Length: 195
Ligand SMILES: C[S@@+](CC[C@H](N)C(=O)[O-])C[C@H]1O[C@@H](n2cnc3c(N)ncnc32)[C@H](O)[C@@H]1O
Image 1 (cartoon, helix red, strand yellow):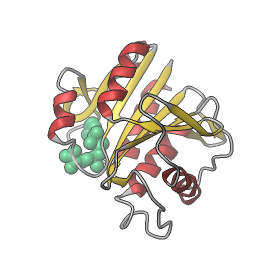
Image 2 (image 1 turned 135 degrees about the vertical axis):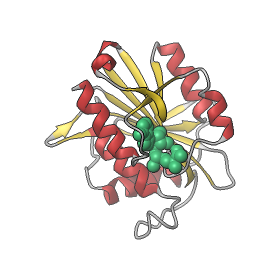
Image 3 (image 1 turned 180 degrees about the vertical axis):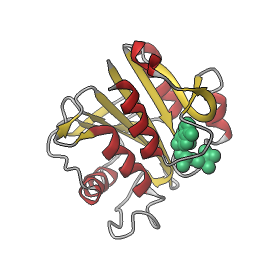
Image 4 (image 1 turned 90 degrees about the vertical axis):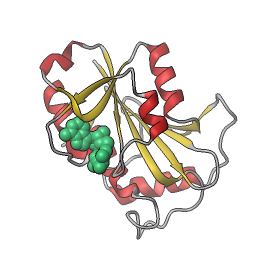
């Protein structure tokens, strides 16, 4: 079973140098996204090689950027959030690849243009079944295990915006429970069901 996680950083800048001492304030709550990366990717000792993460950096004036982290290939990424932020900062200081191109920045970490619309269309072509995480969805169960390729779309500290909600209108909604919890906790619970 392959698991993909699309994480939306609404205010995380798509370009520029990050202030690693203020990931929560000056980087558009990148701290929230990095906690989710950590939970999605890392086991106690090792990396989940059946996971791929797509980060969506939508903030700032310039075009949005996506960053892919492939659990099966990634090298040189450490589990602490500041160190991941350092690598993201280097990517954000690199020119955006041309439309349709995905450049490998370091082993197993790629970046390119695009937004949620592109991720959903790529998933469709790859046979990935998308799931929209929302408190109003169907309560999840071990049924999740029946999918060969599954993709979860999770927002940051903000709700999905109107455009994103319209892209997700045909996507199956699943819920962890009736209270909004933080994205990384959602991911831990999803892993629990799929493990
Ligand atoms: C901190 S929550 C965002 C809360 C925000 N106030 C909202 O209205 O969307 C981050 C993301 O985690 C997921 N999430 C949080 N709680 C959830 C739940 N109980 N069931 C399903 N997904 C949840 C959703 O994708 C949500 O956008």
